[in-house]
Image (cartoon, rainbow, N blue to C red):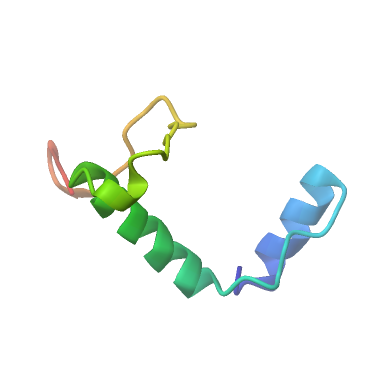
Length: 68
């Protein structure tokens, strides 16, 4: 994370420092690329299994009853 307060909160919750040798922007971009490749059924990722850890769909409400 780029936010020191988040690093502090995570440290207190789990009792250890989070990894900080990973660029957060690159991690997000890599995650997005993997999601797209899985949805496109890319041959390079046929062996990869993706498991959702959140039982709910997350989004941003852009107007009443509409999410993005």
